[in-house]
Length: 266
Image 1 (cartoon, rainbow, N blue to C red):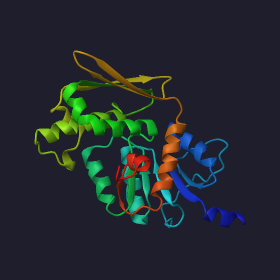
Image 2: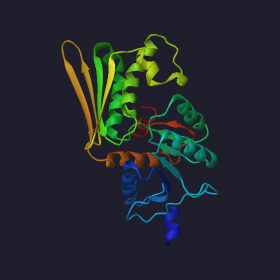
Image 3: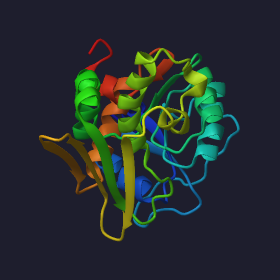
Image 4: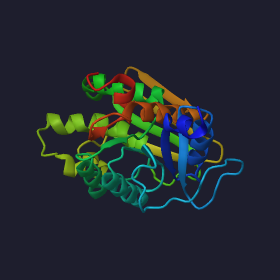
């Protein structure tokens, strides 16, 4: 098999945000796996020692990649989702901090292409998401809930998408039980907050931490603390890689990491 034949059997990916912390980890992780070919890095700077084309043309590229991986900014993601829709390519979004309008934009484009968006790509946190959803009715009725997060100092969005996701799992139950008008267009943490004052998020930015989330459940009788700590970004990279393998042949739709780990029928 010559090189071109070999490459045709690999999943070709674009990594947008390649000069960031997560982008750099993804480059190293995907470069070691022969199932993948990093076709483009969407960033001006090229990581030292990685021999990959850094130039990305928006012209005539419809058959030059298979999956777009986005860890940029909300504005950058909007541009990339539009590009993938134009080319009919799936996109995996790890960017957080979207506003309501941007979420609607992503949802609309998922009617044309597969889009997987996740606040957190680790198996452990997705297991917690799933567990909280399963027991949310009991937990919200019996405990006060507090979320504490620690992230590296360069993380822009405060609180993190992961913490907002955890809060919304419980807060949406409050909305449903009170029969409030709460459609997708109103799905933002500020509106949810007004319905439940007992779920608080405290955020710390540190020089040394990758990611830590602690969720405390307390009442007058007891206190339960659940802590999830990420010691290496490779756990996120593994989740992104698993997501690439999962979404490459999916039909159009809006997907999440829980579906990758646990499948849609859960």
